[in-house]
Amino acid sequence: MLMDDLPVLPVLLPLIAAPIAVLLPNGRAAGAWATLIAWLSFYLAMQLTSIVATAGTVEYAMGGWASPLGILYRVDLAGAIVMTLVAGMASVTFPYAMSSSAAEIVPSQSKAFFAMFLICFSGLMGVVATGDAFNVFVFLEISSLSTYTLVALGAKRDRRALTAAFNYLVLGTIGATFFVIGLGLLYQVTGTLNMIDIHEKVQAAEEDYGRVVRAGYAFIMTGLALKLAMFPLHRWLPNAYTFAPSSVTAFLASTSTKVAIYAMLRFLFTVFGFSFGFADVALAVFLILGLVGMFSGSLIAIFRRDVKMILAYSSVAQIGYMLLGISFATVDGVGAALVHVVNHAVMKATLFLAVGAVFFSLGSHRLSAYKGLGKTMPVTTAVIIVGGLSLIGVPLTNGFISKWALVGAAYDSVLAVPSLAIVLMIVASSLLAVAYVGRIVWAMLLEDPVPGVQAKPVPALMMVPMVLMALLCLYLGVNADGLVDLCRQAAEVLLDSGLGYGGVR
Image (cartoon, rainbow, N blue to C red; front, side, top):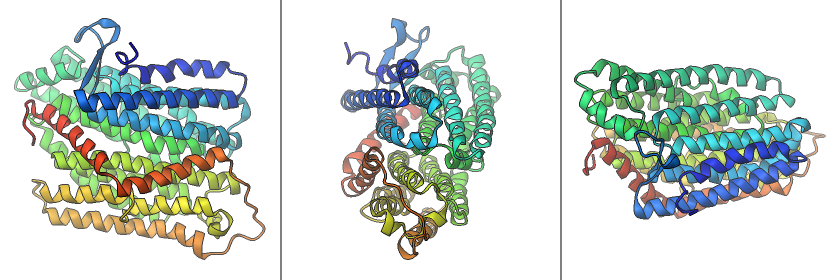
């Protein structure tokens, strides 16, 4: 019976657990409860991935009501990978938050903090699992509304968290409005909200309702682009990441934009597909804005003086890499984008968890606080170096695997832009990453510690997760064949649905 309900259990468990967290006696108990739920969801997500990898896409009719009357959960291989990723990041960041939140959250808010964390977790899982287009909107808003609260809870240490949360709320609401307007236009034409049904009816109705469908396409893609922080719609991301509590930043950086990327893939290929006349225009836009984002994010990061802000702008650049892979619209390109979704989540969790440890110990994430960190906090320094090398894409790290896959996909693409030019841009953007990562490493290894500053010991609940993530960066850098093959299979499934038949573009 448990296996029969696998597609829905990882979504329902954290949602049901959230109000229970508020009823527990203190924040420590709420954190332990949230961690238990995250670990259980991670186990269920891994089981689901194993089933989908061997048996194919899994469908689950909520309440026994079949589509199109009922709400269908539909988990393909790419969705299973992202669900496992989200649950894995929750299982790492939740125990970390038990210690870090004590220094960053008002004690009276700690139970609500973990309740919001669980609701955010549930919303992200729901976006990936559902096969109903309107449910994507519902779960996006569940995750977004809880995220605004989580970001604002960073106001204990820095009041700018409140303005960052408000800015995020305004832009997130605009994105959600665009998205739901697009869904309304599609529903007007098709009369259904099931993604597969929309796909079939859009193909049949394009000649009669071409303008309406194209408008819906544009609204949906714009809304999702804002949610995933695609350049130039990324303005909410840097401040939200910088002023949120450390555990929140680590979780959001490794999951939120990745889920939005997956939602975009679902609408690009499962809902609209390649036969839709507007598809090539959108892919060209993703190519251009992906390349611009790669350089603009890295260039801005070079001149920031706050380490969290540096890493936040680097996320804008890394999202550009993912969009670049998607824009190729090939199995290799989309597969490379999925590989980078996983690898970037791991490396950013590594870095933001380590930055949170520095903040816990020294009370600052300004670059000046990192002077001499190699002498005062050697383990944390090693973790940051591993994460930084992964961002650059140095061999033997997982970042190299991602960029190598993107380079290979660029050579095999059928774009009008010369493949060599794109490859050179990937390399050039990586060199920019050397500059901003190098600034951090220089301060840690080659400058003297700030006189009179004593580093507090970092609790084991914070040290263990970040060391595990650093080791995973290295492991995926030397043993990535399984991940690459799995992501390639997931890309084949996505592109087959976009073509509407068994061929591969």
